[in-house]
Amino acid sequence: MSVELEVAGAASAGGLTTRQKADLSGQPCQNCGTEVDGRFCPNCGQLAASFHRPIVDLVGETISDTFTLDGRLARTLPVLLFRPGRLTKQYTSGKRARYVPPFRLFLIASLVFYLALFALVPPGSYINVDDETRAEISQGLRDGQNTDIPVGDIPEDARERLERANISVEAPDQIRSDIELQVANVLDNPDQFAAQLEDWLPRLSILIVPMTILALCFMHIWRRNLYVYDHAIHALHLHSWVYLTGAIMMTAGPYLPGFLLWGYLIWFLFYVWRSLAVVGSTGIIMSGLRFFLLLIFWTVVISIIMVATVIISGMSVRA
Image 1: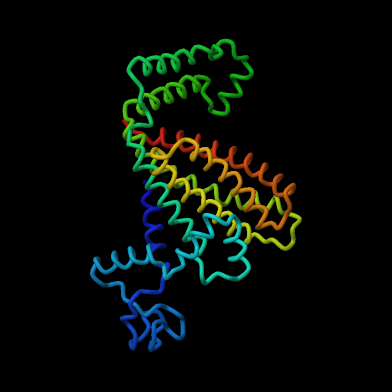
Image 2 (image 1 turned 90 degrees about the vertical axis):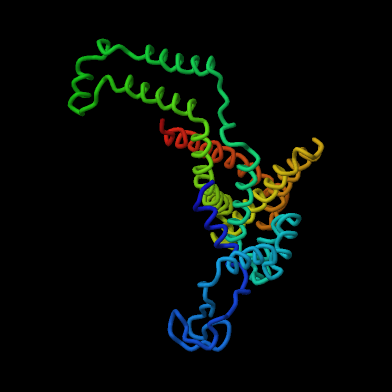
């Protein structure tokens, strides 16, 4: 899994509460030098705490914060999971202190999702190709080289323009040869390909959030009372819900009856539609239209990201 995502998630979890010990109270602030009398510096607001403590204390504090969060997690999750759009509406209206900040919530949710995904899918199981199938794939790539237009059939003036541009007319054969070699490397090193997927998927999938923000802005372009900030909070909450419920379903799915899995799909569709209706304060028709457009947009963007992830991961495999 992406190291950056793990570090970001852990750092965010550790900073969600103000329960860190103010063990520098009564000393000069380490940031501005002002004497600190309480938990925070009266001048710059920095927490009067030292993190040069035993690692056991820091880890224990982070774990404690993750599960307690000063009650904010207990107040945030029920609203996020069961009241579509309500958390966004509350947060953008100014009621922020009682809830987990959206970006931190998103980081934790994505961390939980990818931990569950890569824990449940064994490394190397992405590719399970026998020798016969591998030979057929390689032969198909080689046969593709024979579909090229022969060099002699390229018009003379076209060949001259290519040569002046320092473009070799044999380049397509070389490209296919490189592709064939890389495919063979992927087939021969499924564990390495799996590791690359685990590294690149969290990095590229985070692009869905800014793309969703742009889509929401476009769909509400004539709504002057909704700002980019509102759409950003909404997008973060939507994806946090998807990640958290997705992790739950991946973990519990094998033990649940099939009708509950279909029920989750129906709840997903209802949740997105209802969230758009609540945040946008619109009726059934307009929210339904935006829901339909958002589903199409997500389908296209996710497909592109998945293809890009496979290609980049495959190109990163080395023999």
